[in-house]
Image 1 (tube, rainbow, N blue to C red):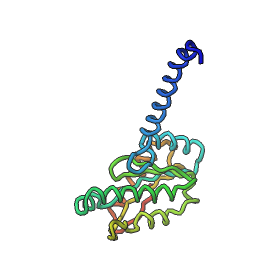
Image 2 (image 1 turned 135 degrees about the vertical axis):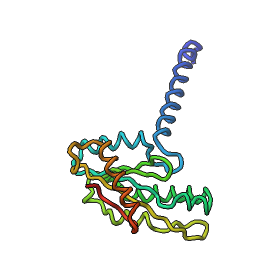
Image 3 (image 1 turned 90 degrees about the vertical axis):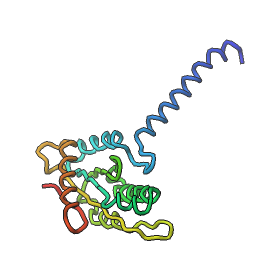
Image 4 (image 1 turned 45 degrees about the horizontal axis):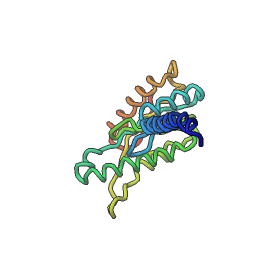
Length: 183
């Protein structure tokens, strides 16, 4: 190879490598490192797209019940395992019908194109299955709040999140586990 060609290609290769590294970092920033779910920013972009295209979409907020007690009693490794298990169960439930994300801590979010096509009872059952960890079966529980976009005067994600949040706190306050739908 001619020395002049090599000298001309070196900066281009450096820029290509730099671009590849930046692309990888951007993709990583949109994924939660523990659960591999979308972070708030990555999920929000997908959720906005979904609700624009699907008038039957619904937004769900999921909060693990008694997570601090689980973490404090059994240790952070068990807490992490509970978060990973919850993420896997939510991701599996969403399947091709939606997208799941982790807002932070023990709070998760999902958007599905059509709640009628999704089995909400199956999600509740999955989120309440015990966690098998180191030969122990540890109880898991979650409160789920749901907002159907069609029930909002204007189908905005911020309003859907607020309604799902209120519904989730209503579910959390009830004596039995499960979900609650807004409105």
